[in-house]
Structure formats: C-alpha cells, structure tokens
Length: 119
Picture 1 (cartoon, rainbow, N blue to C red):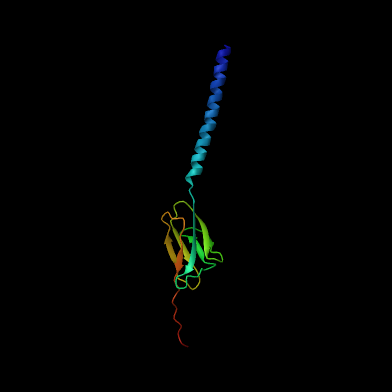
Picture 2: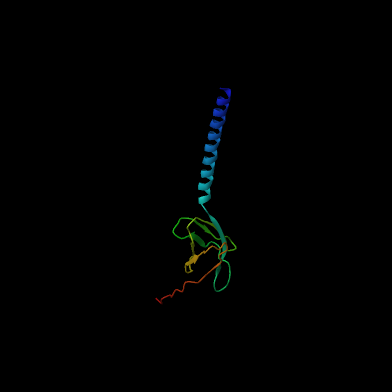
C-alpha cells in the first residue's frame, strides 16, 4: 500500500513538472516569434556628401521612426515583416529604400529642384 502511494505521488509530481516545462517551452516559442532587426546607416547629401542631421527615418507603413544625429547617423529597430525605410528631409527628395536583410543602409538624398518665378 505504501509503495502504491509513493508511486502515485511520484507520478503526480512528474505530471506537475511536465506541465510547467510544457508551459515554459510554449512561452519561449512565442517570444522567439517576434523578430526584430537593428538597421543603422548614414544619411548624406548626394551632391556634397555631407551628412544630413535631423533627417526623418521611418519604417514604411508603420509609426516606427527616428531622426539622424549631428553626423547624419541613424539606428532603427525594424519590426518583423517590415522591409522598407522612408527617409525625408526638408528641401530634399524622399527616398524609399528596401532593406533586403542588410544591417547597414547608407542613403544619399537628392536635392529638390524648385524653380522660382519672377514677380
């Protein structure tokens, strides 16, 4: 009789720990599904090659964004499924860049050509 109780207790404990193990395994699998990647780069003027501080860098189709620092450098975390950046700055043409698995993406912005009419 004592052996039966001991075996029953042992099996109950094993089931309890297996449930905990399964829960932790499922939980870790769920966290690993959210994949983010870090992309860095420099935004420069296409003509002069000078860095552009304060340029907007956005992940296309999201509200995730950042601005470049004084050296024109940015770093942004790309959500899973995102593959394009939109870079903009006043007086420059917007640039849409496909990431394609890269971790460093440097962008040279073109100046917007504007004509001034005589008054």
